[in-house]
Image (cartoon, rainbow, N blue to C red; front, top):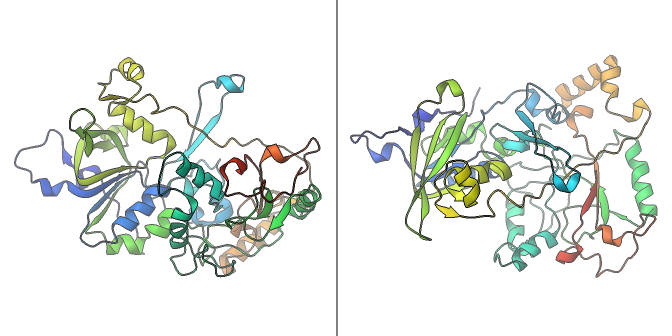
Length: 420
């Protein structure tokens, strides 16, 4: 069986302090990618396409490839104690009456794409056009659409310029099967409220308020196609192992910065084993071209602050030497908060019937093993609805059908709520 070659800190870096007789070539790479999650896996794959380029990926978690991690429904269980899920509680949030929020992440190659709802959602064009309007050239929707197409292979949408069909099996949409009967009733209710159903939620011309079937990230075998499996498969990583090094179960402690004033840049990375029993020895790797930090919305600012880049007062409180005062680092995080609303439905309309009906569970297990079909091949969510709340009236119905108000390419029309 082909597996992803996992390396340890001592395999890819040099022990600190560095002995003078050790050659730089033994611990230098063209690119060092911090974080092998959703974005890190894609970057590592794309950069290592060039046979003349060397790439080092440092991932906090292991590869952790198991049978359960490939089954769509089972791998979406965020309460699985044996999975790569890590949870903790936030500090009290003053704008939410000092409530605590449960934070979830994933420590494994592939990151949160290993445990999420398998939904492939690009977002509306207005999201990207807003980035461009804020002074970020190259980040508008039309600029990024070719990259969406390059990174997907869809099997349930017709050929078009905005859907990919010829690339590796990153994304593939399952045919709709109404495993949850209440879904059809919800769609009818939304249509009565004036919210139309569309055939493709990811179409750039979809209105700002719409409901549709979600795209599920699975492969040809109906297994979860997390980004590590799609972009850093065992076959690919074995073929490129001479120039693509994947160091797992390893914690980055700080960046090595060089230069003065505003002219400094990251030139290397300090790291250690994630296992505290092995973390006494520090290691270092040097980047010839770039260090790419993609450790997620929480760990990326943490690594920057550990490197002396962040709010000056906070860094001094923690005893960290300040390289540059950057108040925005670690602040202004916007997360998508999920608010569960519960209804009582017949057990036959719920996936929980697998827990109460052993015979049905056995049949569904057999369906998946033999044909990759049935309830286990589905995510928990089959439909989504996006709405700008400013367009809802007091009865929660759509208050307009003006095409200009529903043009999702205009930043002000971006949906701000999703019914899942």
